Image (tube, rainbow, N blue to C red; front, side):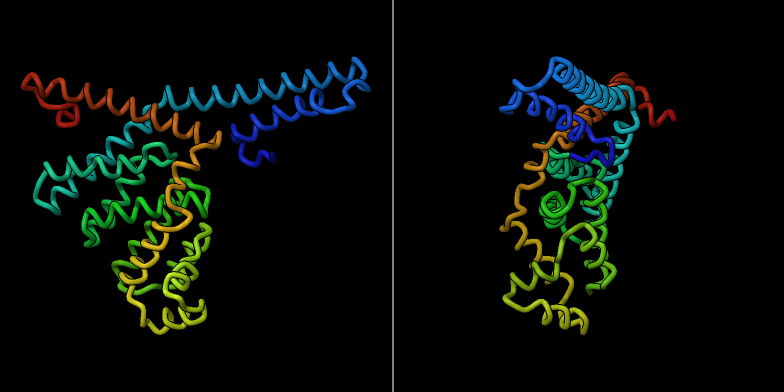
Length: 274
């Protein structure tokens, strides 16, 4: 595994290579004691490097509250926006469970999914439809792309702009192509058309953005990418990202509980006093 970004996944896999080289090949008897000792040192060194990277990642999450504050701010922004749109703070609080459920078992953060749902809802999409879009696209980004929060933000930004404009532009398609998602091909296969025909229809504006988005979303929901966000969490990097996200969520719960204590005693919350 080539470690291009200092990933824990690669470090752990590379640490395993010397073990298979020494102990699981027929030529092991031909190795000199010095060669065996050297290889064992490589094993220890590789495992040590992997452990060091893992500890660094845990420590960074455990001792940093930035992620927790980001989650709390995202949740607060979501609730305010949805309450303003629906006229009900109770609906806003209850609906927050939906973007939270999208993050469960994945490497995505609440600040990404909540903001994505909020963005689509602000553009006029119903909460249910917006949540479905984010859920399906989170799987697609994990299946076709790298499954990162940054890529999901890019995808949802493109979908939101299509929805608002009512048409599909090349810049929006290019954003999805960059991730690894080919919406033109997905739409063509779903509609039984050639890609050339779809490209022509998009160029002359005969395909409405809402129809384009809904067709692609439905095709992906029933296709190979369904459930990919949780399956992607089986990798080492995604597993560590999931643990980090859980730690951030834990800190967010602690901060939220602390903030509610003054209110329970008739005092303003920490944010209100700030």
